Length: 460
Image (tube, rainbow, N blue to C red; front, side, top):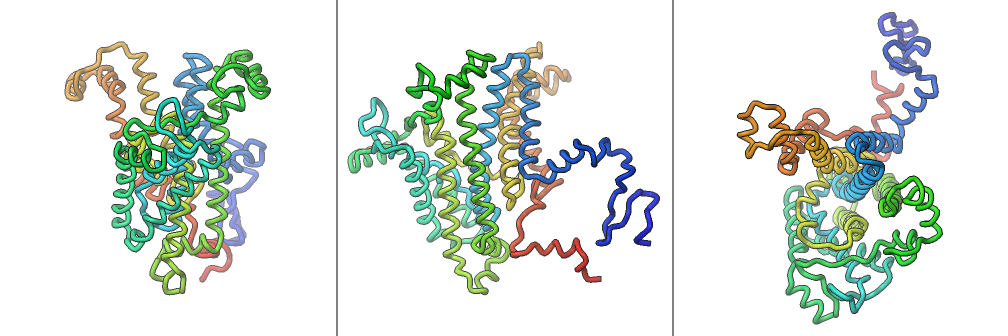
């Protein structure tokens, strides 16, 4: 029977027991899989890069629909904003995935380690005698970036020594408390004064700290701010910018920084992939699956957890530098509130803890569809509604007018956004509890044992 064609499904049985569609007849498929389009679609489904690119293309299509009537600059500018947010959330989600997805460490102090990284970079790079704001050491930017990662790793070490003996929710409470201690310390004017009096630098306290100018601007403009463009800037501005098809020069410079973020994202991804497939990475996943078993096999669990905690904190510090260090000014509140850690956790949950590609897609989907999307869509819809806004939710419901209710909803997107986010999380937990790519979580074994069930080595 295994060699006969099934007349109902028009498929043939493979030697390994599965079924293989007949290539001569594909009802209801909509395309021929042997065609160039079918091959391309199949490659995109199986390719990690293809999944990310398709996600971005769908987001760009939505951005175009929202802003195409406002002109080219609005479309390209919104695409740049969404891409920036997607990439920085993806960077942060990858760093958290090393702790939570790979090792099972419930670290909810991500915002604190990001703050340590970006503030250290600012202190190291700022001028010793600035025109305004706290003084710094005046060292080059690369030194500041390395210092930010190093200090974040050291703070992670200090947190790991006592905290990693705790399990699950106890570790979460400790890391959350540490994150708040870091934020409140950076916000303290007394701490700022202490640093100025002892080592001659400061944090700015609650006023925050100005960041060095984005070095990407210097690739396009001679002085990095305004004036004559460089050779690269002249070529780009003359072709795509205000001297070409009309895109704002500032938007193009922003896209330049987006490309830098994309390079760092690839670096994060490759690092975590190689780490995950190394002997050290297999130790991490063994600890995630069963810490007691890993310890009984002679693995120094405490030392391994300290190492991975430091690596993850260093990556979180770098993510903070790339994200907030490019914003011109940083402040402990509201930029590094615990809500930031919650957002990053949601991104990892959406993509699937343990999957690096899932963390990237989860970061992009959360930042663009769930975080920025409702506000942008609400503004676009409100622009075409000609109706007064009811004063309260009860009035909007009592009016029984869908237009009035829509007007209220679009004018109150910020609070309703959390309702929408909660509904999405409930749906994901119900339909895909492991996330979009949670089925691709790396196993703790050196060889994926699930492969045996797909071949001829099954027990009959």
